[in-house]
Image 1 (spheres, one colour):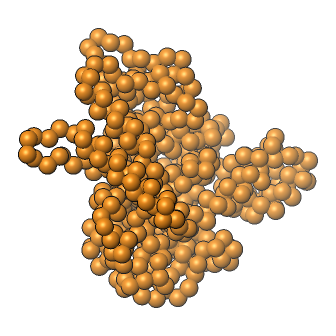
Image 2 (cartoon, one colour):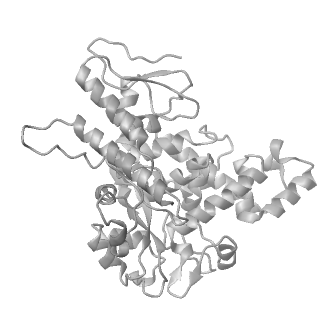
Image 3 (cartoon, helix red, strand yellow):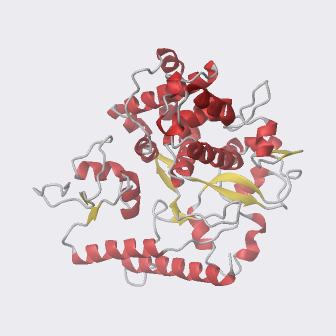
Length: 423
């Protein structure tokens, strides 16, 4: 990032924080109340040197689920869903509800990565099939990590493997590679996720050959009629069964309540070359060492000395990262913590200004007109309200579909007021 862009980003974000601070009440002579952690975004530099979008440091598991659900290519249970695979994966909804600190953050990270590129969230189910969403999973036959890459495939997809560091076990490196590959397959097979996952499992050229032999085109193919290996056909059925199980779980209010608890937003950070022990670095930077170790099995036994400099590690976003980046000399202090860069904060300024103007006026509740492609989760995050609140205020349910032009009531309506939802 150039010095001019960095200075502009820092100035914009500083202005955002100042504007937000000015809108918060403070008693005479007392310091202005700080932003709450859930409101304060954390920004980390990606492994390719790109600046990530402002994001909250935590969110609820329900928000992750709703993002997954709204990104499905088809959220209706397929008629041919296999009872065998439904039984095999019946534990997944239970695991999400009972191990939220381990599963939901990673699941949310993968869902976010896919949705950023407008890919169906069915692909986020692949790690359940491959590894049970265990970053350190290894197969006796050789595959490793969330996505179970073999060594040759990993190197073909630019995942580094060297003494002391296996990038297949890095959720950051492996997910980036998997999403790149899935984007390619998705385009190759005209956006049919079923053909794409067959290609992911059996190889794209084998699927192209099956299409050619059947006289079919990717754009209007019938995957169930293709002559492909049984394991590739079963792969589609596994993902369909998983999707169906999660859609059905979302109809259960008790299950939704169970996952409706805060979990950290995961982000990537470059581990300084001076660091030798991941646990010590995590503790110094305010992270739970055990959790950081769990998310980063690529560093054998948590030892970073042989991994090389600036390897990406996955960590929970921290509320003070954004503020620390505003301090003089912050860039020089990066030797012991993840480097932080700032994104354009104009949206934050606009949202805080809108909130303050409404509080000052004390009258008209805010509304939002739905634009194409917007989800309940995204709208709720923009205005700093809970998704459950937003749904309730507008008489919507978890599975409700938003249509462009609908007007949603953001703030609580006056007593007796009808929710402002329109087609």
